[in-house]
Amino acid sequence: MYAEKMFIPSVLLGAFLGLVCTMAFAGDWSQPDWSLALLLAVLLSKPKTWIWLLPSVGMHDLFLYWSVWGVFPFAVLSVILIFYTDKKIGPGQPQRWAALMLHVYALWLTGLDVLSLFLTFTLSVWLWFVFSSSREKVYVEPA
Amino acid sequence: MNEKFRIKFKIAHLWWATVFLCIVVLSFQLPVGQKLNIATAPLIHMVQSPVRWFQGLSLWFDTSRELQLRVLTLQEKVDKQATLQQVLTTVKAENKQLRRLLMITQLDGYTWQVVPVVSRSQEEKSRRLMVQGKGIQKDDIVVSHEGLVGLVDEVGAEHAVVRTILDASIAVPVTKSGSQMAGLVRGDGEHLIVDFIPRAKAPNVGDLLIASGAGGVFPVGLPVAVVEKVKAVAGGVFVEVIASPVAYWQRDAWLSIASKQHVR
View 1 (cartoon, rainbow over the protein chains, first blue to last red):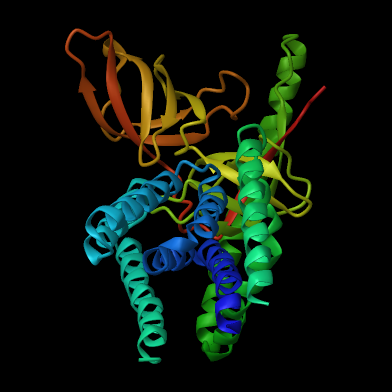
View 2 (spheres, rainbow over the protein chains, first blue to last red):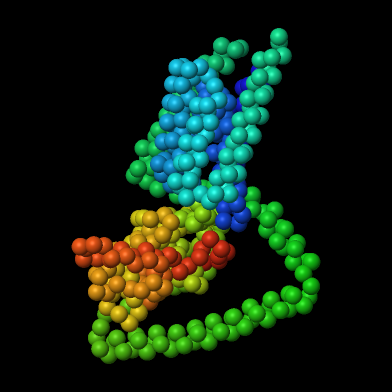
């Protein structure tokens, strides 16, 4: 229960620290977009937290691009896509992969280099796996 | 307990969404992103400290011969700069005297200061930078040892954020040394586009474009861009010119800031 309560504050704090790390070391070496990778992974594994995540993606854009017209519109589209397809064809991975690719495309449009794009993608997939597997464990254990 | 938590959670996310909407609305009128960058500068410094410690520590492992060589190279550079500075001061005084004799308006001078780069935006070509320094003002010019970098966009007590010339919001009037060509350089995020160049005065690939001083914002003669591609548009009066910045700010740890100083 406590872990559940602290999940969103931890994600928001992690995303903020990710933003600071991105700003501190961008230009020195290739690194993933830490903040977006975390937010995206949470969005893919727990789409119901969208009300917390979308403003966070917007703040991420304001921090890094000084406007909300970076990744934020694509994040809004992804949420609509996930909810719509979950309802129409049932919850599944294809729509989540499509949302992930949509974000990668958005990052590419912002001018991120290929290595950073790849690192963001892999970090996001790994975190998505971690968050989803922890939820599955909670679901399976009572049975 | 569970119900209480759920209600609190709902109120909190409503607050979160409202605050975000207010910030978005404000961002259309005020430089919210820039202010947020400046506000996080101390935290960025803190995160960077291990790297600075490591750099300081690594000096202990350099041999005295390597360190001496580095000092000598730097000393040589300082001597060259001092000579150039002397020439510049003489030329400036001469120019001022001639303008007074010819009764021409005096040109604005610039006060220069060197500042460290704190952070860069994460794009491959870093369109925005943050520098540390006092007394920096909005619209001050940022220059590297190679050429023009951009303009100061917003200032804090000890930090300032810089919009580079790759940003579409900055236009720099340019010319080619020894010609009557006049154009306007603006960024498209990745490259620089040079507008209003007539066919007859089209530059060649590799030509250096310098600030013409028109508009009075950028100092005359400052190197801005190198022409990469020139393409004639069928039936058009102007040619399509694509250039790349002369300065390479993705690598520079120090930049110069030129603040306008009104000369009487």
